[in-house]
Length: 143
Image 1 (cartoon, helix red, strand yellow):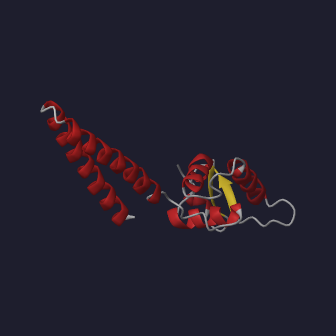
Image 2 (tube, rainbow, N blue to C red):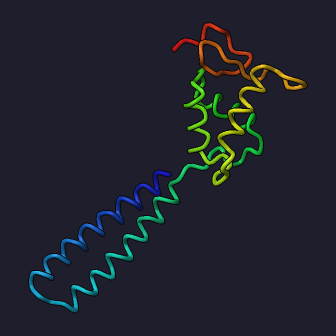
Image 3 (spheres, one colour):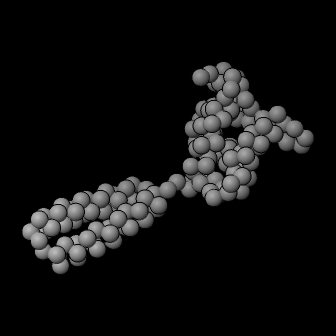
């Protein structure tokens, strides 16, 4: 991701330089060169947008089920979190990106796995409004 950020920074600098030259040329009334630089500016804008897309976070996209993504996130942060933080992090991390029901599925999975309904084990638990791994001691659930 650091390489993408460096590419993005370089593209932004090139864009700014191009825009400055465009303004200078427009002041000098060189229409042909102004048009050429404006086209270059538009190309750089599209490249910057592409670099921003490449920098997107997809670290949780590989998990098929909500509980596996939830457990991976909890392992990553190493502490209990609020439901809102958990859901936001997983959605921003690419879990089921583009799926309108992803958030609902996450909330339902949290409820089901925290209560251990049916055959589901208590892999996660909710204490003091915070969600953590089922095996974590309750003393860790402090806000």
